[in-house]
Length: 469
Image (cartoon, rainbow, N blue to C red; front, side, top):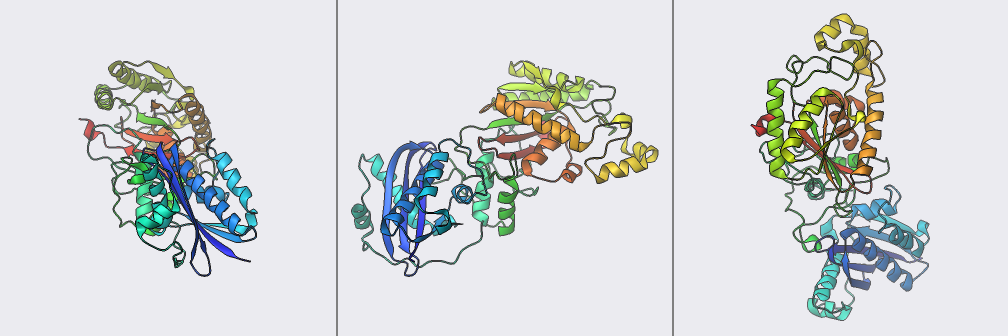
């Protein structure tokens, strides 16, 4: 039985924009190029173009020998993971293409491998030739392609050994592309966090797969002109792999990293309320306590946040927790932005039961066993029938899904509390429950999570409020 290698690629200059694909079929034993295909598609996205390239490559291989086995190699993490069934396909433009590709050969005769982009140059070149031809009002032809290269039609291609599932440049690119869509206050000194294994990345001006980290990023070349940044190599392979793995756990366990070309995400800018009299004393202040209002410092913090968000001009709606400190913070911001505030009960803080108003030390002295249990398990409740972190997470996840559905493609400011913000970030990162104890969130600090149409997310934190002064 013959074995073919199919290498495919696709790109879009604008994403969506003028798009094209390229595909190459070679003999697995000799490396000889057996067929080439490329086509200008008109206006499409990167991922649609990549799927069209895959489909063309599989069809070309089928024409050569319908009984062959095929090994597909692509630099699109999205296509490879979705075609292997590890990531779900939710985008309506890609579902029929993926289904059609799956029917060309019996599934047991097709395998898939992700390769770095530099090892997919042949298919990438054909895709760009097709886009160039389309820009001239011409159709791509194999003869014109060969003439341009001044190479014979059949040229040996030496198969390279299979590489790792991610490299430093690809991982860094995935971290940058998704975060590019995340609003950022005019400031310095932000901490950029990729949708990876809870690891802070180098500060990235934009970013995800970039986050990936689950689809493919917008690319800084002919495939997406003006959509990306140059990416410096140097991060470790393990970190790039972790970025991809963790980002796949955002909303559905089998989903992957969010591509920028699934349309604008629902972006939640997460604002912790300003200080209350209890904040500097580090006292438990949940939804079952005294419901304090902001202090003078807290109102000043809210005003600085409002000014920063006004400079950005990206917030389109404001939703607040029902507690006094969040509604007051939201009101100050809303007055500056000229927006109304809606209240969402699901954004309230955890109920800390009998611990409300106490410091950590006081709780340790009065309820040591309950505190130890609470620190050890997300299912443990604070003394006196408070709310466990597991219950909070269930509530926050349901609220998140409700708000995503209501605000698809919009940027919404959620004015809430420490635990809801940490929980939203933790869920987006796919981090375990104990990660809540490893985050510190300043009063009036900003974070952001962008939720994409295929169920994935990217995260950025702006935790230092000093940049607002």
